[in-house]
Image 1 (cartoon, one colour):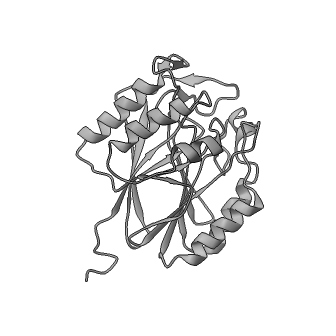
Image 2: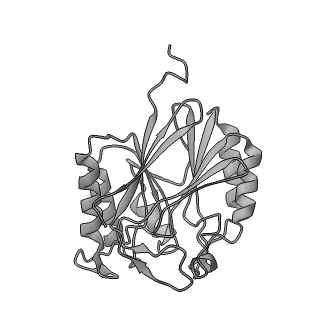
Length: 258
């Protein structure tokens, strides 16, 4: 049997913040979000890079509707691979959990693939755009890691656990982001924290843990802006290859030139 260093990497497709509506004609800041997600998925399928799993990090819908979740389920189900989902501040967790209760969807729970454990965290705070992680969610994270024999862990969360260097965005980030980073650092097996919410790219490290954010499948926000501002960058997604030695490769894919 090949050792962990020689296995094929786990291929992860990261999608975030599609902001779907029940009405497929609806737009968010000038972008038809259903058409945009459809275009992203078509770009991925045509790229010749088959994913083993999709990670969807929140704000799946914009209008609090079951119909929007049905559109998400129909589009993602066509990929034929597991889809691991967490809620964002625009999601309705109970409705989302119910709409995505059956395979291929996984709601937050830990899932093992080869040498990796993937755990989703709910950072939503009712009535707030910013997020926080409750003590019970942190305890669940610890429990999922402790119960797994996986050598490496990837954690997904909607809100960024780090500053984005943007005055307005940093007011709606993760309230206890430093606590999350310290928690995963102590586990000694978490290699990567993956997030959405900010509609822009981020790549960094905190205390030895990689922190990675991916732009939206619809409209982007202008980086480093003090006030709210949209960007003209196109929709995007990220490819991650998780290796058996705990390292990973990351490629940010814009579906067309800006």
